[in-house]
Image (tube, rainbow, N blue to C red; front, side):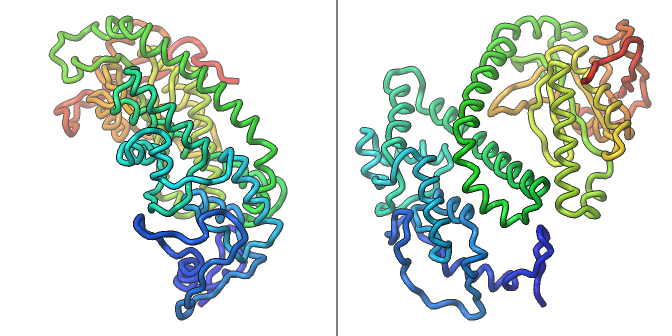
Length: 430
């Protein structure tokens, strides 16, 4: 029985097992201790090997240069020999543009040039998300060496400890990895929808498009990082004491979150019946639903002065600096999704308390309670806890309706409070 590609509806080249076997033949796995032949991206022939029984080689017309480029950037292997010559040249040129130079160094040469042990260099590379490399793999460029020296110099000069330098490096590696995947998929989707390309055609065309947008995207990245860092200085440094003072109201210091350093309104929003809906949707419809949900949440949170911490499938976690700002964001979310014909309703919960901020995420009992209350909320409603409700009491913008006391795992008996809009227009969305 043959397969059909979900993206294009065309018949696949071979059943999954055969196709995987063919790929394994074209890109044989290597171990860190095994020398790799063909260590630069180029047209030279790969070593021949017996094709596994049942394997089917892809025809040149079906080769995906972008996939080969991504493989090459993980390991210094050759671009697939079935890739047509012009496409292969484009991939090689794009790699030079992205890496800044040709690969010329092995890992030991790289570490020695930076004046550091191989063990220390590997810690940095792993934090960036690089793969394990063998001694004979030509993977690095002079640009890589300059970057490694920059990180190490901060440790040598005493600006950072080694642990902190690795943590900062990991933040860059993980965030840029997610960002790049997001950007590639957004560009591919745009070409599929607006230029009527098939998914494979769009991915091949991306190799030609990227050179035109590398510099604008790079400029945008640096600009955004500086703006976000400035905002974080104000949010996490200059206004931290003010937030803690505000959070002391109604507390006696014995609360589980009392030792934590930041006061925040923590909110969760999740789509109702997402799992059942996702089972009935095709790939494109599901992608559109998720993107619409996330983009609407990001817009509302931004307008309300909050910060989107993360999205996990059908759920969004956000924070705001005051309970009032968090309440406005929560109510706006509930209202917007109730009026959106393309999206299901949401359940939203908000808790004002103290949190620990680490690795770009937030932790603590406040986060856990907000998550528990989300699961208790009825579709289209917002729940909060009694302490948060007491900080909002007397504000005419909010109506607070205590609900039935219920046992909440990890917190004992909790009396949720339904949050509803009072007077005023709430958040004004564009």
